[in-house]
Image (tube, rainbow, N blue to C red; front, side, top):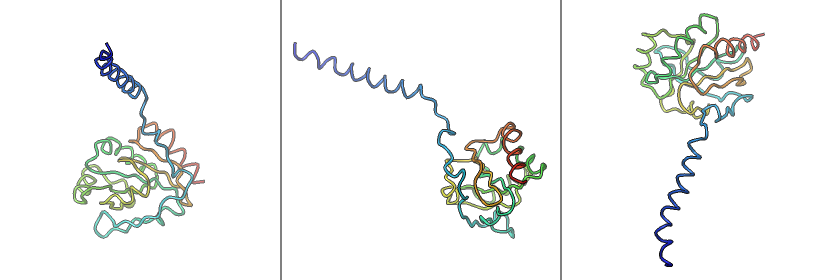
Length: 178
């Protein structure tokens, strides 16, 4: 009779583990919940080689004096492809855009931009992902709005959507540009 609990113990453990898994599955996981620790702080100092031959280096000095949208992208990133037309639109609206080509072969990124259009004023190459670490990105695409003095004012950890452009980025750029 004292050995019966040995037969029940695995079933009890299974029920307890199933409860933990069920609880974990019911919790919503949203990348936005990670937070944006740079918002309200100075953008990291970077100095990146240009993606295009003969282009200028992309440094943190490039976003001094004018509101700038900085986008981390890669040609292998499907969400980057989906959001790309919105960056072309931002460029047509006069928004200053800088790109950081994240962990991507330069020739692939150049071909991708040649095919889709290049909305960026400058593009820095980040083949090892060091600038991504400095900015605290969790993947691509991620987008930052940096004000005239180099302070991060917005960080989106997801692909842009039309509402982001219409209701968040354009109004923020307009407000910060005054």
